[in-house]
View 1 (cartoon, rainbow, N blue to C red):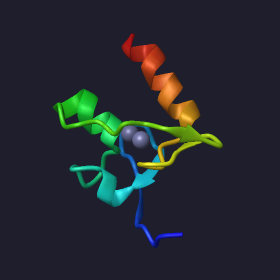
View 2: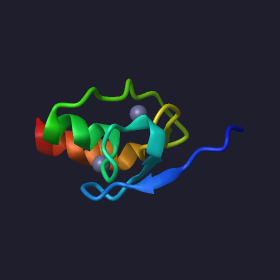
View 3: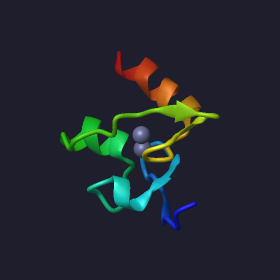
View 4: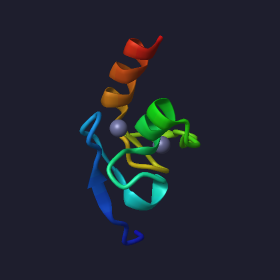
Length: 67
Ligand SMILES: [Zn+2]
Ligand SMILES: [Zn+2]
């Protein structure tokens, strides 16, 4: 288990790994859709992305709004 800093996204309020995002207060998913930064290649396991720690239920809610 690596020691990672966990932030809360200002936009979707999901927890995410601070070093997985280019933005200080946004998860990689929100920084992608709001500012065009590279998104995480999400891989959800047990309700969390293993790469950025985004919550799967929050991700699905956002994708419903975006599509
Ligand atoms: Zn977010
Ligand atoms: Zn991810």
